[in-house]
Image (cartoon, rainbow, N blue to C red; front, side):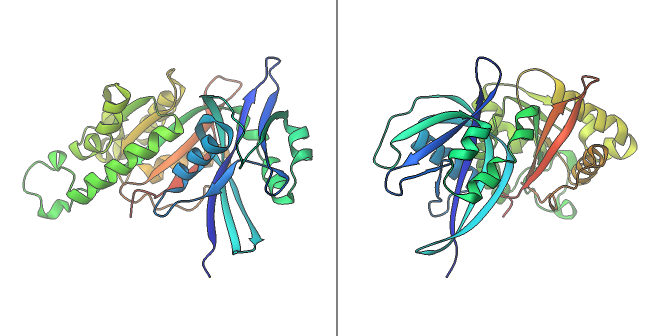
Length: 299
């Protein structure tokens, strides 16, 4: 029997005193305290499930941050696998329902103590470092644009194919869930087309980044890496950066090496993206905290 798939989030905020508070919910049907989560609808992508379920159970709209982890446990219907993110509230208010009748914002240690299930307590114990994140970049590989061998003309003008356009539409849904506010792209048409709908929805321009194309990056990789870190540090919220297949693995590898991290496996397929989350260093330059690979739109 296939596992039941669910998604949710550890939603956190800072109190007026600056302490971290976490949202925990009471479910009267089970008489337990848990993190907000729920089952994925048919065909629904997991980040979408997480944001929807948080809204349904807490009334909060949220911005997703890094992945927190996955829990597995038995339920009467079989095995349940729940995927979690750290998330920050952006608005909304709680209303009791038959599903969730109480919401409490608690300091992290008290929230861990109140949770009814060991797997939730273990998961929440990993939230502390995620609350130090200050910057985020969603590093996207352009969507499908056919084969260069069959394109007649300037390769920089090779457009997205119909499958690539469908991938771009999926990205249009997913990237804003992580709080995307700014959009950057390598100059190739296929890169710009991949993120143009996201930029249009946000009402922002696409800022062209020549140094993040394959050719420019291959000759000056340190400059490309430096520019990505500059983009991360610029004000205005999380940034979308669309680039190419030879650039992205190198950028992610350099960032994770510098931070002493081992990223989750990811092949940077066309239409995929990396969630790169940074914290501030003593020098003021962002330092990579975590790197999450997503191929939701790459199928």
